[in-house]
Amino acid sequence: MKSATPKVLHPVAGRSLLGHVIEAASAVEPHNLVVVVGHAREQVVAHVEEIAPWALTVVQETQGGTGHAVRVALQDLERRSIPISEGPVVVLTGDTPLLTGSTLAALLLEHESSSSSATVLTARMADPTGYGRIVRDADGRISAIVEDKDCDAEQRAIDEINSGMYAFGGPSLAACLGRLTTDNSQGEEYLTDVVGLMRSDGDVVAACLTDSAEIMGVNDREQLALAARIMRDRINSRWMRSGVSMLDPDSTWLDVDVDLASDVTIRPQVTLRGPTSVATGAMIGPGTTLTSCEVGEGAEVIHTWAELAVIGERAKVGPFTFLRPGTVLGTAAKAGAYVEIKNSVIGDGAKVPHLSYVGDAEVGEGSNIGAATVFVNYDGVAKHRTVVGSQVRIGSDTMLVAPVTIGDGAYTAAGSVITDDVPPGAMAVGRARQRNIEDWVERRRPGSAAAEAAARAKSATALQDQPSTDPSQPA
Image 1 (cartoon, one colour):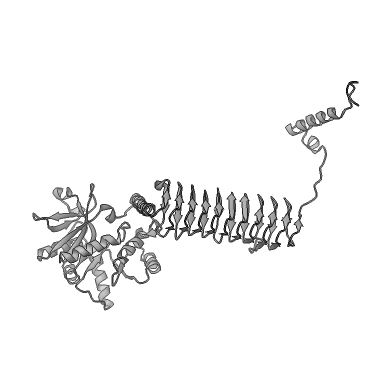
Image 2 (spheres, helix red, strand yellow; image 1 turned 180 degrees about the horizontal axis):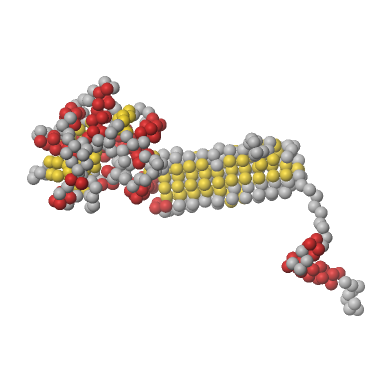
C-alpha cells in the first residue's frame, strides 16, 4: 500500500478492510473470534478494541506464513483454556472487504453436509495470477492447493483459485499444523499444505465455489479503489431496490452505516458518510457531502458540505453552504448560498439566505439574517454566544459582536456594528453618520478616469441648471 496506515485499516465505504471481515464473521455468530496481528500491531489492536471489543487478538511475533499464523491463534486459545472442539474452525483473511456473511453461511453448510475435514472457499477468475490454484483429481475432488509462485506451467493455467479462507475440523487442523514444513519458495508454513496432508490421510476435502468479487483481496491502491467501486454498487443497488431514487448511481457514494428512507432522491455527485440518516421525501445533491448528519422529511440540500449537523423537516440548504458540527436547522429553516454555520441553532422558519457566517448562536423562529451578516463570536481568546430572538430582522452587513442578545421582534439597521443588547421591538443603529467630501476625487486623483467622469457629470449638471435664453421656453 506504500502507506503509514496498516493495509487492513484502509477504509472502504466507511469501514476498514478488517472491519468488513469482522462484520461478515459476526453474521455467523462465532463462539470466539481471534484476530492475528503482526505489522503495526499497536494500531491494529487499538482498532479491533474500538470496533469489536469482544474479539480476541494475538500477536504473530515472526511472519512465518499463513499456517504459522493459524497455529499461533490456536495456541492462544489453548492458553486461554478455550477448547478446540470438533469444529468448525473458520479461517479468514483480513483484507477481503467484499466477503459477506451469507457466503460464510454457505461455506459452513457445505462443510457440514460434506462431512469434510476441510472445506475451501474457491472462485473462478479470468486472471488467476497471484492466487493459489485448486488442483483436482480425476474424480473432481480437491487433491492439493499450489501457491502461485510454486505452480508449474500446467497448474498456472488453472482458473479456479483458493481464496485463502476455509472451514476446518478443529482437531484435524491442529494435528496437521504440527506437520507443516517450510520447504517452499518463500520458506514459510503454508496453510494450503494442510489440505494436501488431509488428502494424504484419506480425509475428505470439499470446496465451496463463490463469486470472485467476494474473495478479492486488497494489496495496493488500485485494488482498494476497485473494491470501493464494487461496494458502492452493492450499497446503491440495495437502496434503490428499497425505494430510493439515484439519478446517477456511479457518482453516488454511501458508507455502510448510512440509513435512507423510501422516496429519498439522491442527485449526482453525492457522498454520504458515517451514520448519516435521510428521511422520506428529502432531496440530496447535486454536489453534496454529508458526514454523520440527520436530514429531516422533505428537506432539500444542494451543493453543501455538512458534518455532524441536523437539518430539519422541509429545511432548505445551499447552494455552496458549509454546515459545521453542532449546526441544527429547525423545520422549514433556510441556510442559503455561501453561508457558513457552526455550533448554532436556527429556529423553525428562520432564514440565513446568503453570504453570512453564524457561529455559536441561537436564532429564534421566523427571524431573518440579512446578507453579509457576521456573528463575531471570537475575541482572540474565547468564543462567545449570540442570541437572536423570534421574528427579528437583522439588516444586511450587520456585525453582531458576542456576547449579545437581540430581543424578539427587534431590527438592526444595515451596516451596523451591534455591541450591546437590543430590547424587544427596538431598532438598533450602530454606524457613523455619513458625510460627503466634495471634489475629493478631482483633487486627490487628478487625471484619473474617475476624475474625468466626475468632471463630465458636473458639466452636464451645470448645463441643466443654466436658465434658458429661448423666449419660447418658460423662464
